[in-house]
Image 1 (cartoon, helix red, strand yellow):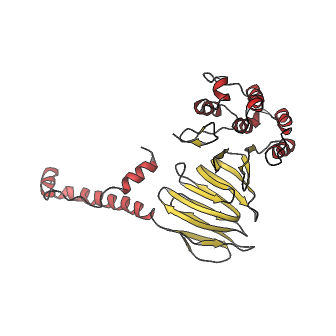
Image 2 (spheres, helix red, strand yellow):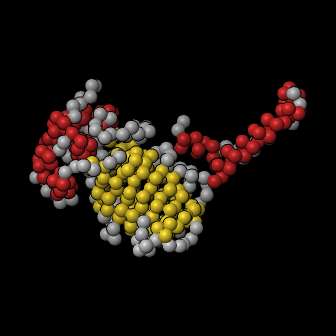
Image 3 (cartoon, rainbow, N blue to C red):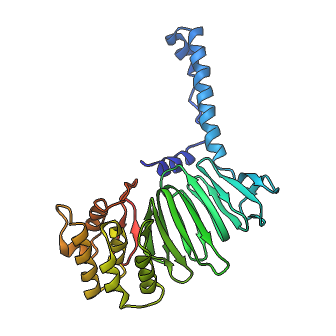
Length: 310
């Protein structure tokens, strides 16, 4: 049972259980009278602490600390907070992390449950740090939603809804209507309304690689694929891995041939399985790629470009 399931199961437990009779006299006699009372109170205090944790995680208000400027001290579900040109605020994400809201930003609190901590970034920039199991923290934007996989990242959105996500620890998944990208440490993904996430690009990718990828994905230049593959290095393998699901036919074969030329297939993974986007084959291959990160739960990519964890 993972932590999410454990929390949900705990939430379904009855508030109290009444025994058919008073059991304490018999227990006390067996344990040695007064000495056992000390352990009784220790156990009672421990149970109270556990109950307090569960109560606190249900709060629909998150605390805020203003680093510059001034404003309210809490943010409740349905409320928003805006920072001015010179103000900044840190939002405590329940008990799992914090989000620094940079100047000129607007953020809304959409959900604050044990299994769904959810913000919306309408415009501006945030820096999020979360230490929790995957898929407990979400940030919605006009171009899709950032899904925490245990991470730290910068997310920026301009007035038109365009922006980027850059990961500084762990990994983030970004999704828009089935188009997904897994963004590991040191990778950046561009986001666009109506398109979602681009293919992730490693921090030290060449400017030529970045420009050519933008021409392919956002400019619709289909001739850019050949140039992109020629520019790719082994450190760009994760970018090509994502391109497998965004190409078809001969283009997918070309991406595959370049990818395995840079990073050969691991034992047990077959060419045909990768080309038909077999989820298990792609997952196994992912773990062999430079900069791939170990994630809690397997990341898998289906032929439709959708991913899930097991």
